[in-house]
Length: 212
Image (cartoon, rainbow, N blue to C red):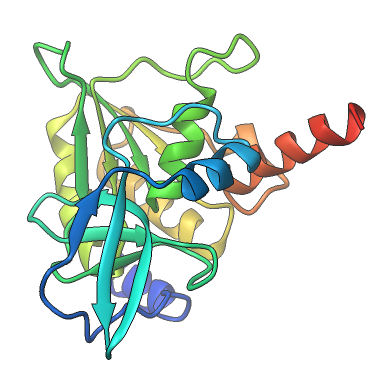
């Protein structure tokens, strides 16, 4: 019942993907313009997994940034083409593990990789007490929902950073019901904002407004 409810809810708002992507998606160095866009929007720290993405679709060339998911598909974003990240080719969650972790006991979960980038920016900030973690899982697409939920069983602690929307709240409730006692919802940090990405961007705009 929970799965059907979540799938139906997410399908109503799922961003359409580039379904006719031609072969030859290339991951390259992050372009200066994309890095500038991210920095100007408050993403002051970028993980090494973020790369430039180039591909063709219906005879047109596109470029932006993103990273590979767990089975070789690519999560892609560029503000001129789409409001939210989309998946190119194969759908799968993305699991990002800390290279220093010997055991994976705690993980953070995100709806898409822009929320993950927002989290990465806030890590280490004295203003926010973000959880210590060994891995991060980015859901990225509706078809990855149950895969992500099942993956959560493997961890002793699960920290959720889902959107403050019907979709985000439904996913969070499902995870809490599945693993009560070990799941913590961190959406209180960005209460009043649609998601963690919007919170970081608004925070950045406020800082720039003060110093104008």
